[in-house]
Length: 409
Image (cartoon, rainbow, N blue to C red):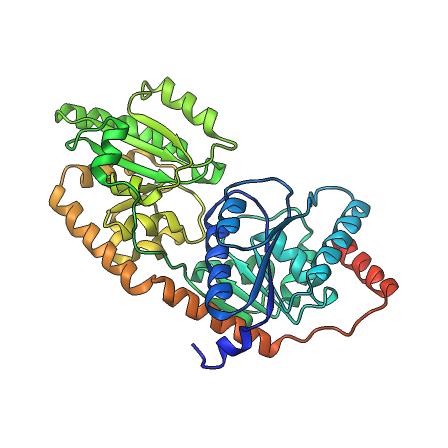
């Protein structure tokens, strides 16, 4: 980290722009960075969410002493409605008088990319955490917004490639900053969690920590688990799959599939869990069956806890597990191959211990929170040194500029 970076950030007003009030990976990372900037670098930090709903991210922000405000932005109507929403967004940001805008996820990135010069901010840092298709703006609007952002941060190399390919971003302005994870600090022990769940020590337990979104493809994992449960039952062992996360929108369909496959006793749905490290520590294996991921922090948390992990053979997961862990990945939507990978680890305790230890070491070396924060602060320091705020406009001029930006959408 540059010696000047803490001085550059001290006293600066930083507004973090988030999409949701629920606590996903992007929200958690954003609030961790915001806490560091506030408590250790002397910045004045607040959050502006594009929703007025409440949620666990709001609760965490309050716990950290970070002010949270919401503004309902649908961004799915006609151009006139988008003009009004964009104007309201600019006004809400201007009220905060930020030096730095930090946006997370596609819609906040687009809005900040389009308007940061109009808000009075000195610079804007665009954080890309996913590789999902973004269809709520025209391709020309996406390209325009990405070109206007002074600095773009990607959480993985393939996410940087996505920004270049899908958003036409300039690769020279993209910085790759991989996620960091805190050391495991479970609130309850493995024994306490297993007792709470009614599990014996000999039971084989796998967990997938992911909100029930379509791209997570819980269905393939549930189908694979039918094979796993049958095979381990033939060995005289009970197996349990824990699917942890917010249920919207796919929970009911996944529960129905588990019921149809007669897995209602072997697949469990604990919901959102505050003590994630405690639940992970009670498991023997971490799984991620997604067909699209940026850089899944949930797998890093499993690895930090010393678990082996397996999942889909996609770019984001391959980057997380590295070459050594890639042998436990299966083609997307291939339930048989995923079941085979799970069974290989389930039946070999020594292999699980060896792979889990290697995973823990990988996270300690490459994904420490300190490393994340230092690299992100370097990016902020660079952005503050390179951002060029636009000249102040008259209210009429600002409205005209907003209108031009929205007409692109």
